Picture (tube, helix red, strand yellow):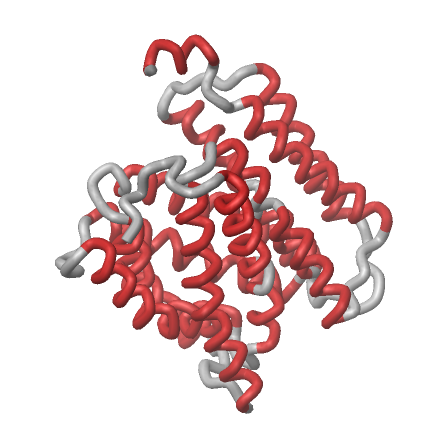
Length: 301
């Protein structure tokens, strides 16, 4: 087994694995639409089918599963909220909008660090936030072409809120990773998130069981995608700079948009395409602006 040291694999190999993981995750909104269940129920099946594989991986890489820590429990709750809001966003708006708006997470994380951790960002970061928000607003007012979403304003709002829940999940995982293995955290967060999503699906009156074999196949696909996609990204991020990885994974919205057009005839209009490009550019700029300062690196070296 790899010992997790950075630089262990060639850079091109890590980049290839990262792109693969992002492309796999790009399948998520498509599979959610194909599960033939409610949005929260789709999240439950995603975690339920991923759990056996996560348990095997966690035991092989970090030994006995033990008991979940408090921070792992918090991460599980945040992840359940993340999946629930995003899956409902996918239901009500276009695949492109749902995926791009949920990828505003890096902006939310840095704003959180500024407000609550007193880590003041650079002026360039504030500019990048304004760019990302302007792009998101442009997407929201633009009109989709082809298949019309059920309720675009509601779906856009839910998808944007997803960025908040995933940011809190990201911060919880970042804190927990100081003392726990990533594979164990993925396992316990899924153990916590699965029953919460099942309970939510029941409270919301969703159809919890797929109506046909194709729906079951999509549910199983979500579980495999969760392990393969998130696992590949986690592996690659241990071997690449975070700033590089955070930009490369933005291939996910591109893949999702292309599949949404191919499978659901969700062609995006010119204004939406412009908004998506501007929003992603804002996220990329935010990552670049929030990189460690050279003097900080020299002090910590």
